[in-house]
Image (tube, rainbow, N blue to C red; front, side, top):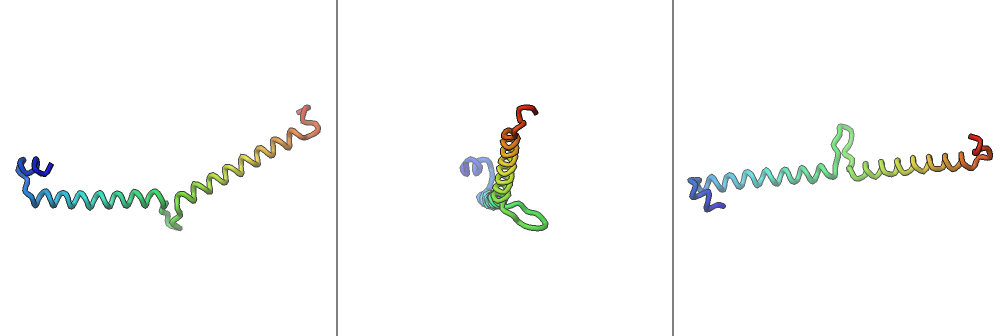
Length: 83
């Protein structure tokens, strides 16, 4: 690729400068992306997204358990057949 660019009229310095700028930009974007996967920024705190997802999962699991227990208790009621 470098040889193609040199044949197209670009200088070695221009190619090296472009590669350095693009390499730095790619590195910064990669770091931002990795950090964004782990942290959710807010004004109040920086909380890992994984913990937020786990808390949501636990809350949903507890809600489903409460609803299931409610239904089971209603079915065990002596007059459940009448309702």
